[in-house]
Amino acid sequence: MNESSPFAERSDQPCRFTGRLLQWACEGLALAGGLILLLLMGLSLASLLGRKLFATPVQGDIELMEIGMAVAVAAFLPLCELHGKHIRVESFTLRLSARGRCLLDACAHGLCLLAALLLAWRTSLQAWDNFRYGDVSILLSIPLWIPLLLIVPSLLLLALASAWQVGRHWAASRAAPEP
Image 1 (cartoon, rainbow, N blue to C red):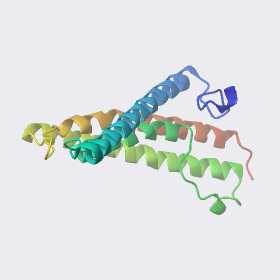
Image 2 (cartoon, one colour):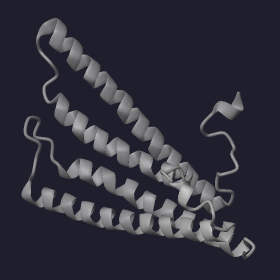
Image 3 (cartoon, one colour):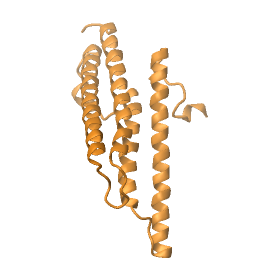
Image 4 (cartoon, one colour):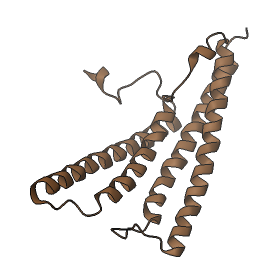
């Protein structure tokens, strides 16, 4: 029964203290993202029932769904990166040596690191601009800087997970035998 748990001990989990701390942070953020999705499902159900039974949907339900989904999706990215569960096209790398595949993986995770840092930087600047100019959502007048600010820690944790993967694959490439 323990093997069915998504958080059971696996060989792809980080083993050092820093890695375990990173894993804990990524799992906590992913659980928070899952909770947000559950709340959004409840909101959607309440809006649907209100629309069908009482002819009054939840005001601003689409705005809340958009904001909540953006925050939830960003919350899942670090755990996905930490476990290397992104889409791969392995048919192109089948003929590479183990060392070549590790180096290619290190480069891919390095690009993810750069993208995460760029997105974190630009998202934080956008949040600051939205705060300064008082931008709000149309129906509910939710300050737009709040959800943007909630996304930035996810992107920074994604960058840390990417850096961890770069180091892990770089070390594996050095340990792999040369062809």
